[in-house]
Amino acid sequence: MGGGLMDYPHPMPDPVVTKALIPAAGWGTRFLPATKAVPKEMLPVVDRPVIQYVVEEAVAAGITDIGIIISSGKEAIPRHFSRDPALERWLEEGGKNEALASVRRLHSLANIHYIPQHDMLGLGHAVLQGRSFIGAAPFAVLLGDTILHGAAGASVTGQLVEAFAAHQAPVVACEPVARERVSRYGVLDATPLGDGLHQVTGLVEKPRPEEAPSNLVIASRYLFTPDIFPALERTGRGHGGEIQLTDAMAALAAKRRFLGCEIKGRRLDVGHPRGLLEACQVLMGDEK
Ligand code: UTP
Image (tube, rainbow, N blue to C red; front, side):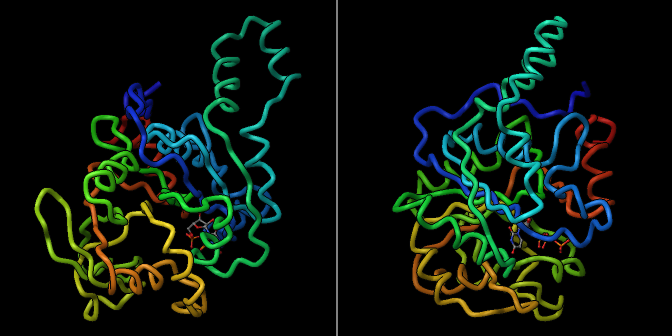
């Protein structure tokens, strides 16, 4: 398969963060009608669904326990990661060893739990559903519709885990974009600390370019301490009438140390058709 496909040969030693949440309950309206019966997180990129790349990135960062936030209609996600003895037997009997290994690997990747979000009130609300699964530990959040193609095969979540281990503060992945594109993202108000790290003092969800505090935008991965949960509980509806994770982060960043970490790699947002096409090209090694 193309040289761009991500395999993570060296999981991180002695992981300091072992839990993650992957929100995957959203409607996927930008991808209708494809996402009416098939979750956008299950759309294939080359040889595997988007969410498998996301789980593999978490596992490569040392994460062993993953809570995937799902809603009704997303049943294909648990089915993908669960055992299928009949399929395995059929592949075994047919001597299809490579396919068999790829299928068996899925249910040994991590301990995967499924957490329902009954009303899709936004990303902040989705993360809040994972509170009892996470408990009192630091944890990662990886958006289920975005692949991060780490430079030199590294896991971007691993980059956040390393920053957390070194600084003992929550970390949000970020990247600079052209000013006119900031209105699609959460934007950081931040001061550079060197080595791609930033001290975050504020965040704004989807600002107009002329009102944005910077051109540094959130890149779909987060490393939180459990104090994000009470902050989320206090967060009212924000941009688009949704409970915004960005607003809860802004409340935390105003009163405690909060870091931004520029990603070493490329963000592939697969939540819309052009992004999916680009992701296929990049991961096939057809586009640099
Ligand atoms: P998006 O905002 O990109 O997802 O959220 P969406 O709402 O499905 O997209 P559109 O705008 O309708 O096309 C990023 C991630 O957060 C999840 C989504 O499933 C996606 O993986 N999400 C979003 C939730 O789990 N719950 C929500 O209430 C909203």
